[in-house]
Image 1: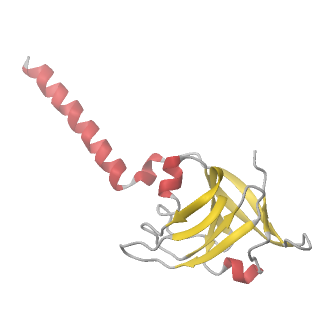
Image 2 (image 1 turned 90 degrees about the horizontal axis):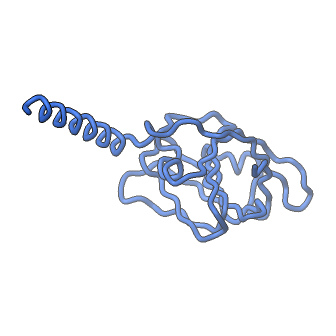
Image 3 (image 1 turned 60 degrees about the vertical axis):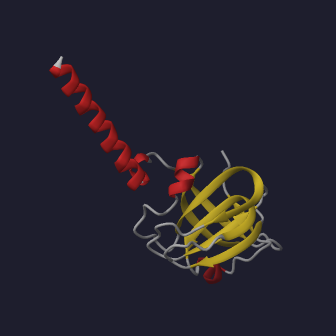
Length: 158
């Protein structure tokens, strides 16, 4: 009986440690991001403004973690958050190591709002906008490439 109790206790301890690790570093649970190329095009002329390679956050855990488990991004790297539909949304800079541009786009990929977000501690600033898609890229990316509301994000929506 003592062995069973000890084995059950050891098993419970392993589970508790795993849950604790996941809660303190949820990025450890995420593997296998899909990737895509997102092209920003001028909303009037259709001219290509820039292309960025992204990891796709298409589920609740990936969206919660976002880029907080990332130490840095290259100049043309980012993350694309894919939601079920266009709605009012708010993003925060939870546990971020670097500033971002947060680009909201509707179901057609039309950019509706862009925020220049700084790294911060609690309480978090809420960066709001309307979108089905939210593109996070290194801060200044939008200005460098002339991306403004009304332009479009084009990518394979799979």
